[in-house]
Length: 301
View 1: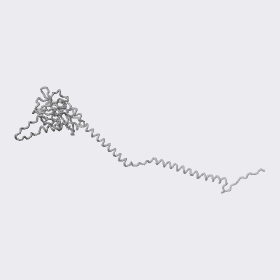
View 2 (view 1 turned 45 degrees about the horizontal axis):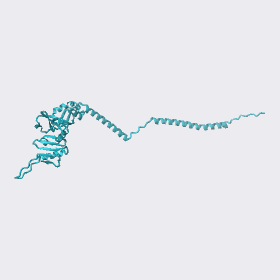
View 3 (view 1 turned 90 degrees about the horizontal axis):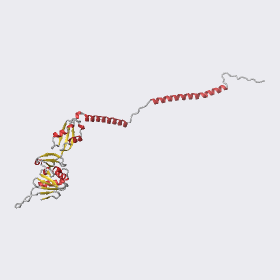
């Protein structure tokens, strides 16, 4: 007879082996689940913490050298701006326009002539007036060789004039031309004695020649005290300049070498006192010719 399967009855209060196995498995899974849930919570907390750290940006103070550099840059910029403003006012302000022009050093040319020549400068801002502007305006005034300007704020312009110096006369018809070393005509006179200048041979046609330049170069070197004693100057070549004094004495100058030394020697010879003559002896004949062509060994005869 087939055997019967007898069902296992559970005793109250006791667990079967199957139940014990199930409970053990559950207990082993529970810590891992708890740990997983804990890790998840910690991760969320970490994410929230990171988000908070990114949201808060800490401001660190600038290093001291950077603060100083920024201060210097700001100061320099302010100074430059002020300078630009001041220069703009100075260049264009009508308060600094030229109202008065003064001249110094002019003797040959009248101040009225100079004022008329520089009339275009009036009312122009003083800082805008240059030496080149003044030189260009004075160019038609032949007596002016060069000029230099000086600004005296707020409205005065001072012009220092260097005039050409007449050194000789040139015969031109019935009149005499006053010329400087370069042959520039500075004026005319009908009475050569009043001019106190020597006459150059050749007239106006002599201007520009080598002999003319040689003669006027000599005359420009001589002091006024000797120049006023000369009657005329002549030269057959640039190396044979001769001078004639009003009293008839003559000077052999020679070439253009040692010009200043020759002028000093000639002045000393002309101003030398007459030698003392012993009683009973004839007085020496005064020198009529002064040869300074070799100034370290001058000759008189």
